Length: 173
Figure 1 (cartoon, rainbow, N blue to C red):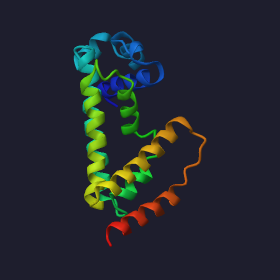
Figure 2 (figure 1 turned 180 degrees about the horizontal axis):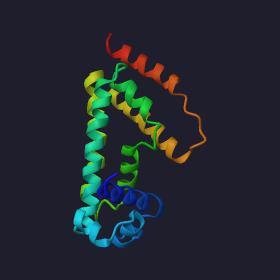
Figure 3 (figure 1 turned 90 degrees about the vertical axis):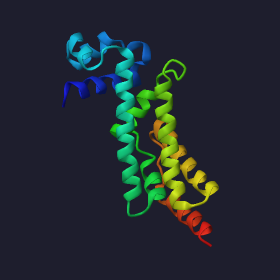
Figure 4 (figure 1 turned 90 degrees about the horizontal axis):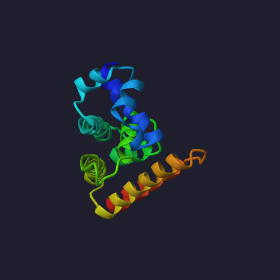
């Protein structure tokens, strides 16, 4: 793993476990086991470090969208199936960025918004109906929320997938 990736991984961990205030350049460098000069080589200041995480989210988001688009079950089913995941690299990056104040870090807020809009658009392209697409995305949002905050709650994905099939069929009539 490159030093740059190790630095970004460390930033994610600090943001998700301790919050934004703890994510100082010194703390990130120490935990990433790089010198402060090494960190500054890759990220000349704290904002550049955060923008590095934003770039990572954009890149991982593009990969996720491609997986949704090319899933043999279709984007809606793929989206719902992956919505209960909270430990993928993409999810870890999104969770870390969500810990940043949107007023202080508009780029972080913007990438979160772009991600949501992009996967909603992919589902909408497949389904072709705004309301039904929105309902499917909101089901996924609910799965994600529950996975984050109620880890012991079982997720009956198969039951929800059958609801998606019913919704799909209602649009194609």
